[in-house]
Structure formats: C-alpha cells, structure tokens
Length: 252
Image (cartoon, rainbow, N blue to C red; front, side):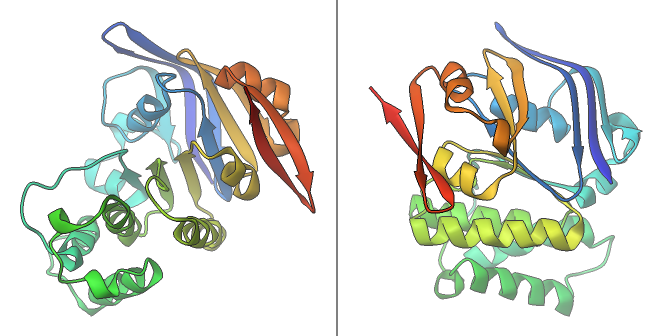
C-alpha cells in the first residue's frame, strides 16, 4: 500500500517555509524524521495529518487529502503531537479510551474497545495508574498515556512527534519493539520524529533529513553516513561499531 504520496509540498508559517519536492511512503516501513530544531519536522507531520494549510499535493491511500472524509482519515491515520494539553480532570483509563472514539460510528463503547484499552495499559505499564488523573502524572507517564491513546485507534498509519520524549530506556525499547511488530502486522507505516540518533539507527531503516525547511535527504540506513548526518545536524558526528550495531558519538 502506498500510504502517502507528496508532490511539491509547501507550507508557510510566519517567516518559516517547509518545502518537500517529492516523497512516497509505503506500508511496512518505519521512517524516522531527523533534523535540528526549527527544520520543519513537526510541520511535516501536521501537514500529512491534514491539520494545517499547505500548497502542492498530498495523496493518502490514492486520494488527495481533501477527498478523504475526516472520519475515514481518522481511522487511517493516528497523530501524536509533540505536546498535548487536556484541560479537564480525566482519568488515565478514560484518556486512553477516547482514542477509540473515531471507530465508534455512532455506537457506544463496546467490549472490544475496553479490551483494546486494557491491552495498551498493560503494554505501557499504565495499569496501576488507570484511575489517576492525567494532570497528576509525571512527564514520562503523560507521554505513555498519550501514546497509548494514539495506538488505541489501531490506525495503520502512525504519525508520531517525539513519541519517546521523557521516557526511560526500558519503555523506549519496549515501545520501539511494539511499533516494529505493529508495522509488520498491519502493513502499516510509522513516521516518527526522533532526537535520539542511536535509537533511530537501531530500529529504523529509512530516514528523512530536514534542514532549514527543506527535505535535504531521503536515505536508507546504509546510506546514512556520519558526514551526511553532520551536515544536517550542524555538529560533528561519528559512528562507533559495536557488535552488529553502530553507536553514535557527537564530537565537540
């Protein structure tokens, strides 16, 4: 399945402009978006999610984004923003359950909805927090709740903006393994903004490199060289071989 096709995408926000001349994203892929702050990573995700105005063309599953009804788009694509604020005193269980709302189609929550929520609470170590108010949680706990909410929709396409922010190492790797299996099961797509280069190299096979609002590179893991990363990130980066992996070292 070709989930996204982008042609001459341009997004203007104030004095900033993002430009992506061409991009195709297919099922079975885990794609990381890398780049320094202000390079357009979050803007790209929001454009693909249909949340901001843009020029050019974005196709979702073969149709232009405006041609896909909102309810259908919500079933196909789940978006996790970089930060989210819930102003009401919702309990953790209910926050996660609301992720199922686009699937209801006019009916009430059913046993399958409750079962899906229980599974995600267990996966993300949230069972003991199920009755806690969202506003009382730590930053890492909130991030796990919001990720569980995004996953609850069971959409084949996941647009994740810094999904691992504030999480400890245990939960980072547990979530990445889950996402890898998720993509395989659903012929889905994970497109994620990441800042941890070592994690990106371990779990992702394709990388979109953004620099100054432009898609500077679209490369596979074997093409992702220290020189290319250094040019994009603006710091000197080296790879250190370790067993069958590559560790990342930033030089001052």
